[in-house]
Image 1 (spheres, rainbow, N blue to C red):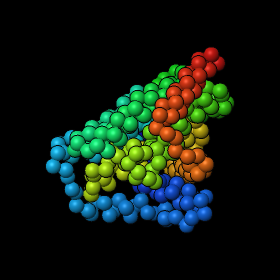
Image 2 (spheres, one colour):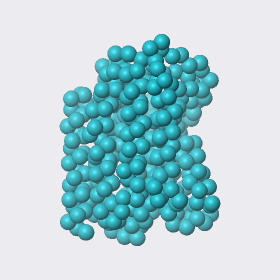
Image 3 (cartoon, rainbow, N blue to C red):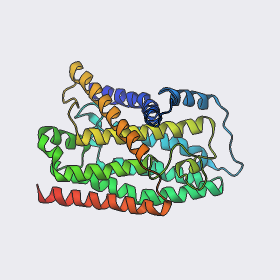
Image 4 (cartoon, one colour):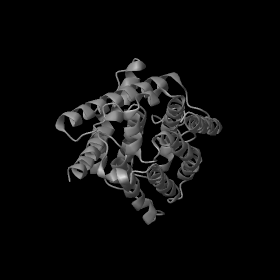
Length: 313
């Protein structure tokens, strides 16, 4: 029972921290660009405003358009139950398989792409087409990159991968781990709509991907999608932090260990947020036809990670 309560608590913590993580990245980018920027709490204020606003629906929208925000939000929350955020092992680790996580993320992407097509908007169709192109290259890379870690752990269970790295610290600096980290970092940028794949700060019709799909949404529907996007960013940060640098993850469910795990998670989130903010201030958005080249390079890195992990077992 304690394990189930901890699973629920860490998901609630992730839901509470996710908008603040987006606000922190925006604030850091503003400071790096010599701007004052919005406060870190700004995403919370935006979500509160959206939940209070009226929902406006297109006359062409079907049930898919109405159901998509709930499917996207629910699938992302379900991934939060399966990703090791604070402690291992936990009850849901038994089903917290690599493939389950990948397909749950793909389920949200699929329904969001359908929702972009459903109202018949030209921009929505354009964004959905681009999103599926990105997903077709990013999702296999995500699976292969984590599979490189699974070879060493002898299991595709995320909790066991974390436990294996904690038991063998030198594995964290092996070539396979480093290559897999680089591949997963690129996938994180693509899956969460960050530069150089997409620009979360623009609404230019000819360049946007995520914003084009959600252009027809408003009110609580848009709030759920934006909250799910922020949670997805936090989940990818947690994967990067806890799969590759798992120190701080609690191995026992004691108050002291869990307190240290919360502190370690916060430190990892801040470090990765700073890395993304610095990276995004140094690069420009790629032209659309160059994005598959970047994702193909990440897939090659993931394959090299698997090869390295297999040869050095």
